[in-house]
Image (cartoon, rainbow, N blue to C red; front, side):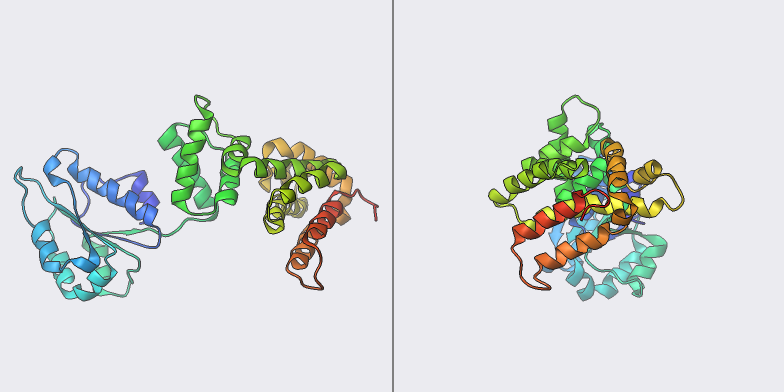
Length: 334
């Protein structure tokens, strides 16, 4: 099972031999806490013993996990960074998998755990295998929203979660930290908004980028260029500015595609355009016309290539200014 499934419903009595495998250290840590918590809640003596995989041998680990505690409960032993440990002691671990007794827990945390090995196949039948793979796309968005509810009793709408991911990236540890900041910022307010994300996660640079894009949608190119100047004059990278513009404009391009079988307003919603921007975005697309709207991706690509120096080296400020002018022009403008 994936770690998120286990965390949603931690087992009351986990299998005695578990492996958490994958690249996400955040999820492995969460899995450890969930499994250990289920066994130690009523037995303080069962607090886990944690070993580094490079510094311990199988005999010591198995001896400890097999020892009955003074209160009659089982032991909990965790071996972290256990890839070499598994490689060096595979036959011993295979033998233990066949005789591990309920009540104790041996948890190995590894990066890779191939399905073709005897140990994997044995634990697939009698143990617990937890995949700690990174999250992306809708799964990451859903995880972040669920974290807001379960940890802070806050509502985090999908657009606000998407904005967080765009600004922070897909690292679960960083996202968790930023979510805690958002909770503190919002106080007693029940919902975390896109504006909150812009203020707390992105800071004033993100807010300025949002204002820049609003000016483009409204056709106010003088204001858009002025906002661009603020960003560049304080050292913001043209590539990062382009990234922020691209994040928003790609959603508009997707909405244009979706108008093949639905009204523009519904298409904007389906494309993930932030709710407070949907009406203004609809007016913007109607103002620039379908011909320009269908070329939005091409316009972004041209700017990206120009910033990378393809087709001749241009001043980066000029490249981004040209992009804003191109995006902001009405239908029929040249």
